[in-house]
Length: 186
Image (tube, rainbow, N blue to C red; front, side, top):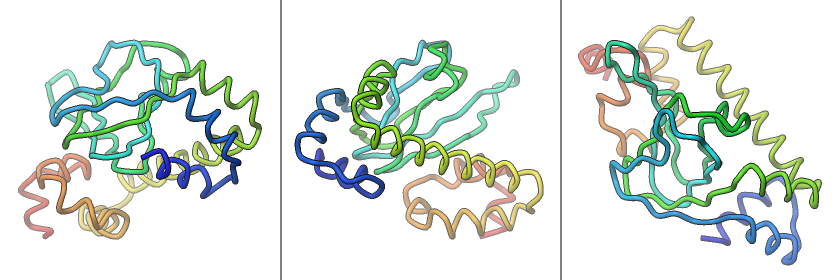
């Protein structure tokens, strides 16, 4: 799994063996079971997570108990409650495993240490953050201006491999439609 994480970094920055060993010395790993929480609402968030294996969903629950899916995260993706992580606050979202999951965990303190020592890693995280901002903006604009059918088609184009891994009810929630509406679109 370490080599897969190295390839992930090296898609953006090249690393020597010593640099990668230094980076890895700042990560921990966790294995979680299906339905286990990685982060629960109101928990202090100390870590960012890179998914080595598995599938997770980040969601918020409104006052009526309705779940609103913010993000899915599969292998080779990062996930956390970033508002809580960067500000060292309590989480406002839940992140739960949809499959058996293995993650690499990076504390904010260790992230800062790595970035101070290796500016190319700071560059890596800046590029990843920028890509995340772009994806979030696209998602918001899609929810605001696209029809349910267009959102479903975008989901299929962006994440064709997730269709087989995620129950239809959760895809409907992610798209902001009812299960019945999604059934009519399929």
